[in-house]
Image 1 (tube, rainbow, N blue to C red):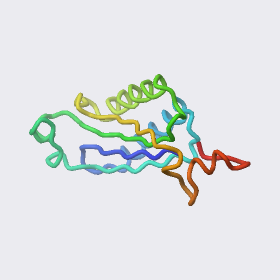
Image 2 (cartoon, one colour):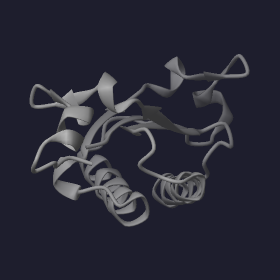
Image 3 (cartoon, rainbow, N blue to C red):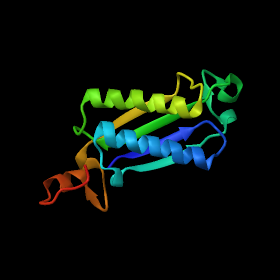
Length: 135
């Protein structure tokens, strides 16, 4: 039941948003083994003049930039899976956005199962339920 927060330093583009969301959904299901029907993605476009790296607006540098954060239940993926996912997300963004600034971050947050959930139930409760779902 991961949720991804995505920021892209470009003008709003519905087609690009759909492509990036599809890429991220596929990588999250394939590499992290998450159920596609439970993956939520919130994507925003940020004006490049409002995004700064090293004190310089991205608009001045000519490269695209992005930030992707995923929250997953702690202990459900290995270090290797997370490293593969980070590399694959960066590569997919570079392909979609063109020249991608190296300071485009991809972050995995491992959240304790007792500290989050959906549908009013924690992940820990789902784990201990007779018909656990949601990991």
